[in-house]
Image (cartoon, rainbow, N blue to C red; front, side, top):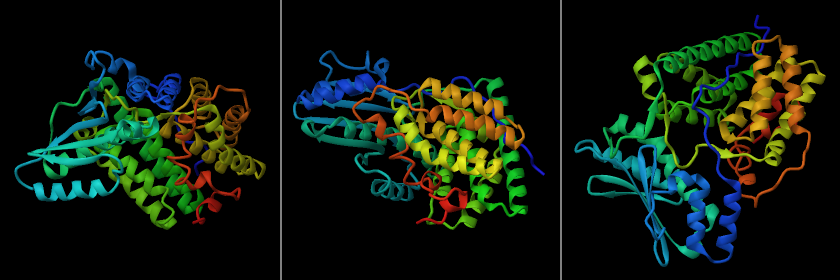
Length: 409
């Protein structure tokens, strides 16, 4: 019998990401609305990471060369247009037809704004737009799309088709001590998850199985922030868990099988994806107090119902699902991060009822409204409203039980 909450460890040093400057974002919007399009684009770049923009542009601030992971963004602000080019991969002499077929598919989906083109033996992301249509939110999405999918697909295309990076990725490998710690925690979390899954399946408590898989995958991302193939596979499987077009037993079976596959990774394959990348566009968007409370609301109500029914296991998993989704999708304000982290540490492997009490106090403190400064809507639209709420059944469910969230659409 498993009578305690899952384990938790604070993230490895260096895996947290910086946040976008929301005040600079407001200036960016003002400049665009005043028709100062060039200045708006420069301000947008500075709001993302001013340290990378400084020293990487020409004197007229019309050309920028900005590194991100394994690619370099070349931005040119001309008199009438913004042009963005990002050399991506070098294609091999052989097996290039299957690779190019894959690129065509990527251009249809998931790419929406930028496209990948072939220039001799080089694949490049490209985008061009008239300045009047370079609305800040749209331009940010272009940059995010290029950087996100370059990160998501480069290692996969290299592994499957023999493509090659055009320049070495800008990364810092984990130290040997960090690598050993990450390896041990990686296997601990997976072993623990499989134990929970076997226990819940024997007890026919299927309503908790998806929670455990989802929490575990997001916990791995939180603790060590893997890159490369592991990150790509984590993201695919987290998305699949939330796909309500797939039947619940199949989602559980797929998630369990993926955890077992992760267990078989060799130390060499694991170490390849353990590094901190120098990135321009952060993987996770800054979350606002208002947005976090809005997205926590249904979790909060569900947990309250579960505690009222003395379903402490359900309450723990509901609140942990909320907290690890917060870590996975966003960069929250520091006081919320501190509150959530302290609660997860205090509930670490505690009896279910004690863990539920600790976690309930933490989410209740977050839900207590306070007056916060509002930005012009960009960041408040990005946390989960756009990225998760349309996918995550837990954030949509109306009934108090977890099953009520799974049979909706």
